[in-house]
Amino acid sequence: MEIKTAEFVKGIIGTNKILENKIPQIVFIGRSNVGKSSVINSLVNRKNLVKSSSTPGKTRQINFFLINKKIYFVDLPGYGFIKASKKQIEKIKKMIFWYLFRSNTKFEKIILIIDIRIGLTELDKKILELINQNNYSLIIVANKADKLKTNEIIKKLETIKKIAPNNKIIQYSAKTKRERKKVLNLIFDKSIIVNNNTNNPTINNT
Image (cartoon, rainbow, N blue to C red; front, side, top):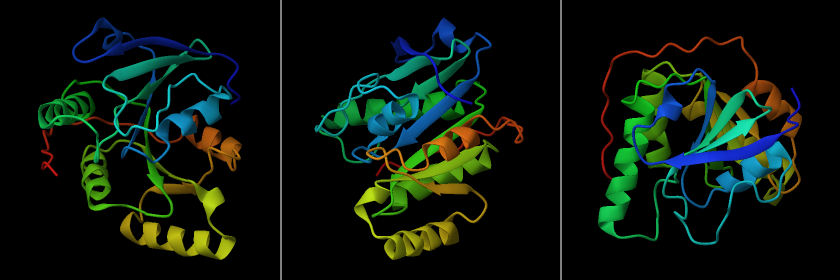
């Protein structure tokens, strides 16, 4: 599936009517500074659809982008290191937790973006565990592959696969758009059914 149109719809910080409509949602999540905004921009072939910044944690709300007039790309705030007050950091964590696990929103897929050079951090692993516990369809996009040599990429991917053996993992480069079509094919693949359950997992503050 090729992306022909992409437009910003709105940003929310809590319950909103946009969560009640039946438009499918593809959710993008990841630590601050892994290039999440750049990945989304590269997938939709737009330079500045999602605003990026050199300041970690610039996104402070849940942003909805309408893709091809029929599906949402949902950009969540980055987690981990954020240049903000402790109160603001806690607020962002609670918002992410609420949206993913308590808003009763049904997601088509969740895209976990990581820096391939760093791999899955402890916080990534916690998020990954919670996502898998809730039976969400998940794709791990290992961004910044352009910064590594082929043999280094292979080793990094092997390490990630050992930690997440049951998840789809793909190398990517927002800069060169390496494997863009493959990522889009995985995103729009309907072969995996998403089943939400009623568990209420918890996130440890880190």
